[in-house]
Length: 622
Image (cartoon, rainbow, N blue to C red):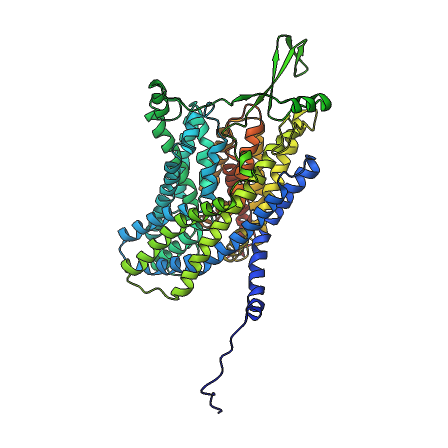
């Protein structure tokens, strides 16, 4: 045998050779993220251009922001793979072996809170308060603005309790059914009560949407790693339901937490305009209170001349009819011999993504630094907690530490880019489409464009039907593009030994999400209370859950978690708020995500019942 050369020459790779080696991997990772976003972005662009007949405002900025989102997700998911996931998996395996149950449950609680704060979609939730008018929904406005940190903390505590209870379920061998049934029953009772209260009614949409925001790319892998570790300790690695159920609980408990937070401030009367509101007390002490109404401005001569030549209403104008005789004629209010006054109003302080966001003089550097700081605040505490648990609690060494720290750096960079891209790309795109979709059935001020548009149809019913169809295909196509759904399909196919095929599951989930978003658009278009659309499907779910097997209950309820990914949440949330802001009489646009979450659980459980029945029919008789 030939001996190896003792002093073999080491080859150093130059930049070109390094790039040639890394490029295929980087390209594949980029394309994987692109697959999850291309459909929804192209669909929104085409709908606005071809159906609404409107150009895309700030198209260059939105396109650049979308590219930044893809790059951010690429770095973030790589950071999860190299940094957070190895830490979570090691702790998930070692903690149940080396620690007592109280320590495991305490870790689960803190992990749930930390993972929630690190979720990219939480930043979208923080920004959602800008679209709520305080005079119309005072309690909702205060939760999203005055008590935004308490709101995020409540969501985190809800997830922490859910993860703790989920781990305890694995340790005790409890059925997921007996946790879901009383919890959902409590939520439905709370919802019915809140629907009858003038202040709490507006909090319902926010609370139910918070359940969808929490089950994202950070929370799900980490809590599943812990759940699988516990399952291996108590039931062996062959446990077919290992890890299932925690995601479901993590999407239900935040709803209860937000409702309880709203109830607390309702009873404390410290929300906007209430007796104990500090701004009301300041007003009584001769301190100027917050301005609610928009400032009335004056039109200039140039705007007046443009109005004379075009005959179109000037942008940012309010039409006031005085004198004359109003009559109701064939569903229209007709004024005879009125005096028409056009007043110019300032952009309302509370409009989501107001014009100054797109000011060319705005500091991009400041936006980048804000995104970086937000990422550091979210990622670093979670990583320190995981490292503390590994080194101090478990007294284990960090294996492949260099890779882990590189991964954590990737996670910070990725989350920074993702947050910046959301601000500059996805949220403005969703807000723009949401603001313009009502043009199918009412007159709107197009987002970022002068003048007015719509309605496209003479009869509002047909315009609203088009808007609902738009919501269905948006949900259906975006869900099929979610990478997490593909992974869930493989898992379920394996668990059911091919009885519930991957393609069948994927289309069942997509159908449920499409129907859910369509129902959400319908709710906003007709200004229906959310309780009317949430309570009936969840009552149906309680019945389906009771008669279904534990196996189908586990992955059916968890299927809702994969539908609310980092792309879907900001776009759908911004779209719902945009639609709600442009439909007359609608206070807010929350609730679309909630309906998009309940839809797939119904469709998957229903299809699961059919699959189970067919299995029994084809099973050989003994």
